[in-house]
Length: 90
Image: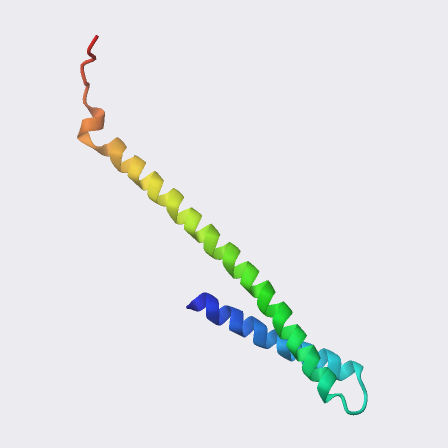
């Protein structure tokens, strides 16, 4: 949910930036161009934010997997069965 909100905020900010950029460049009646600039800015910013969100979520998932594996290995090393001498059968 937080990732989706971040994408929406990024898209909104990109829309404002795109609108302002085109509004500064064009003189006269520029409502159509400003709207196109806002749309393109919103799309580009939302896509960029989405890429960052996906990479962040994948890294967090991988980090949690590694941490769980390390905790399981540490718990297995601390168990009494792992520390006792098991006779070898030949």
